[in-house]
Image: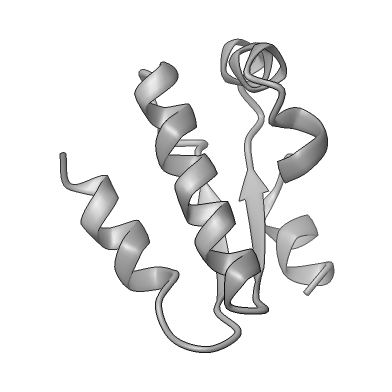
Length: 85
């Protein structure tokens, strides 16, 4: 959908600093995991940093099942994500 190209644009260039806010997300499945994985890999390859904001228990469970919880280390608020930059 529309998320992939946006994430690709955000993770382009040198040392991208990206915050992905999943709080407005109503539906999240393995395709979402794939997008986050790809975005994270692109950011790491370019020497950047990606923060994930998520307070939804179902999405957090999906991230845990996909073994991305320890990799992405989501925080609950945008303030936390910005503070860790």
